[in-house]
Image (cartoon, rainbow, N blue to C red; front, side, top):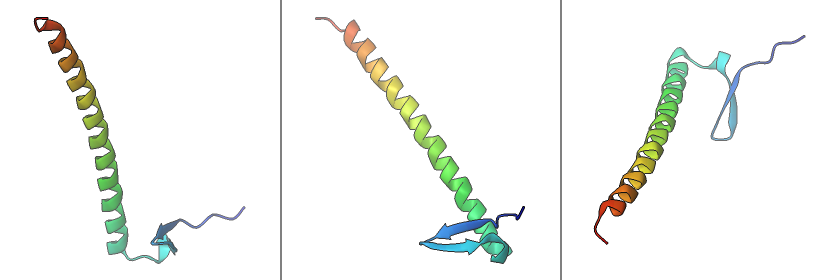
Amino acid sequence: MAETEAKIKIDGIDYSLDDLSDEAKAQIQSLQFVESEIARLKAQVAVASTARIAYQNALKDLLPK
């Protein structure tokens, strides 16, 4: 069974990870880290936005009618 070569597509071009320099690989790792951080932060914003709506609704219920 043949091993599949690890590749990455950048701007529509496939690159073999084995052919990239250590510096290029480090940049890829940094990009992957930043992408995961952005996803994590977006999830936190979604949670905070939901909480904000709940607090707004709770406040409206407490205001005189």
